[in-house]
Image (spheres, one colour):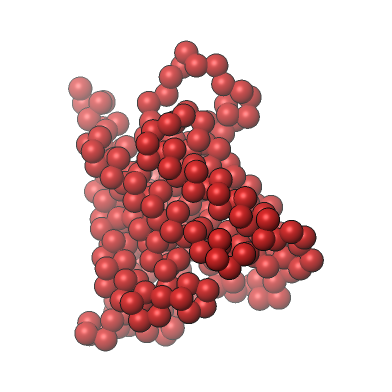
Length: 266
C-alpha cells in the first residue's frame, strides 16, 4: 500500500508541476491559479515566485523532505490563492459569474489545495515535533482535503448536465454514444464526490474515480496535446497534467482510507 501511496503522491506532484511550469514561458499566472485581475502590478514576478515555490514544494514532497510542513504550506498557499484570488474575482469582477463554467478554472485550484492536504495526511505525523501555530492551524484542514477535492468533482459533474453539448465533443470520435458518455461521466463525478464526502465505500469509490480520470487522460487529454500542444497558452498540456494530478488525489484518498480500514481491523 505504501508503494501505491508514493506513486499517487508522485502523480499529484508531477501533475501540479506540469500545470504551473508553462507560467515561466508566458510570464503570467495560468487561469487555474489566478484570474486576470485588472491593474495587478508585477504579474511576471509573482507568477515566477509562485511557480518556483510550487515546484520546489512538489520536489520536496516526492523526496519526502520536511513532510510535516511542506504539503501543509502548499495546501495553504493554494487555498489562499483560491479564496483571495478566484472567489472575489468571480463575485465582483467577472460579468459571467452566474454561470458555473466561469468558476471552472478556479475550482481546479480548490481541488489541488485539497490534494495537498490529502498528501499531508498520507505522511506519518510526529507528535513530538514542536510546530508553529500556523502549521497547527493548517493541520486542522487535513480532514477537509477530500472535501475540497470532492466539491470540484461534484460541480464538474453538474457541468456535464449544464453544458452537455460542448462537453460531448470531447468524447473521441471512435467512441459511439457521445451524449450517453457525457451524462454517464456527470453522474459518476457527482456520485463520487458525494460518496467521498460521506465516506461511502471510500476505498473502491475513490479508486474507481482515479481510474476514470486516468482513462480520460489517456483517451482525451494526451491526443489533445498531440494535436495542439501550445494552443491557447498550452491549455491542452495544462489540462492533461491536471487530470494526472486529480487521479493522484483520488488514489491517495483511496489508499489512505484502505489503510485506516486495515489498521482498524487489526
